[in-house]
Length: 248
Image (cartoon, rainbow, N blue to C red; front, side, top):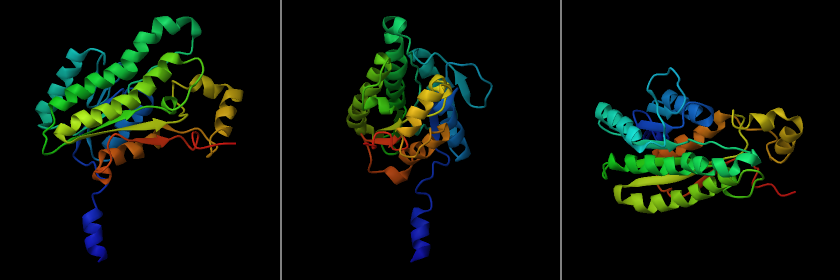
C-alpha cells in the first residue's frame, strides 16, 4: 500500500548525516555543491586553495597529499566516519603561449589531486558501510574543444580514472561515478559568457537554450551520493542542457 511505499522510499535520496568532503569548494560548482550538501543535511566539509571564511572549510594546496591527508584525519577524528568524496577541483588556461608551462599544473589539479584525495578517502572507509566518490568532470571528456589541450586531456583521463577506481575500490564497497557539466556560468567560463557572440553560440548549441547554473549540478551529485543510485558505479551522468545530444 501507499504507506509502505512511502516508508520504504522516504529516505531514498537522503544524504542526511552523511559526512561529505568537497574538494575544490571555494568557488563555482564546488562551492554550490558544498552549499547544497549542507542544506540537504549532510555534514559537509569543503577544501579549496582560496582563503574564505566559512564553517567546515579548510584552505589547502590540494596537490599536497600530506596536508590533504591531515585534513581527512581531522574530519574522521571528529565524526568517526567519512561517507562521500566529491572531487571538483579544476583549473584551465586558453592562452596558447602558456600551454607548455601550464600543462603539468592543470593535469595535477584536475586529475592527480582527484586520485590523491580518492586514495586517502579509501583509507577511512569501512567495507560494511561503504562510500561514494563523485568526480566532477566535463563534456570536454567526450569531445575535442579548441585552445584547451591540458584541460581536455585531464577530463578524458577522469573518465578512465572513474572506471578504474570503481573496479579497484569495490573491495571496500565504494561506488565511483562522474558528473559531466556542460557550459555553466562560473568564474572559469565568465570570459566566454561575457562575449556576446560566444555566449549565443553556446546557448544555441544547447537544447534547453540556456547556460547552466552551478546549482544545476547539485541534484545529480546528491543522487549519486544517495541510496537511490546503489546499483550505479563506474558511470557518468551528463548535465549539459542537451549539448552532447544535439545534432542539427
